Length: 55
Image (cartoon, rainbow, N blue to C red; front, side, top):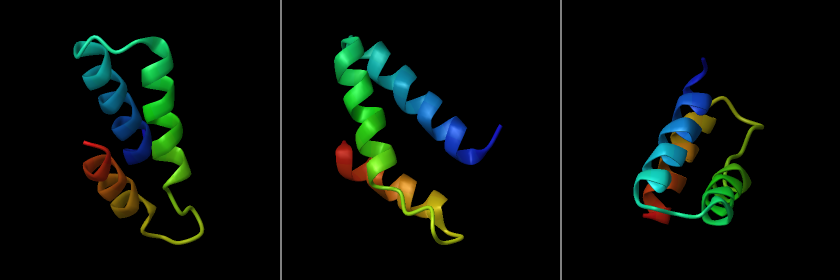
């Protein structure tokens, strides 16, 4: 499992634990993917930064 997959799973689990609805969880995941630049080699760092910004 890639780092990105682990990151997405963790965020989904965190939101679920907070009692978020499926729509809210989908929005968090969508926002995460929209903030990742896959063109470079450092997309994991961007993903981590995006998650921190969301919180």
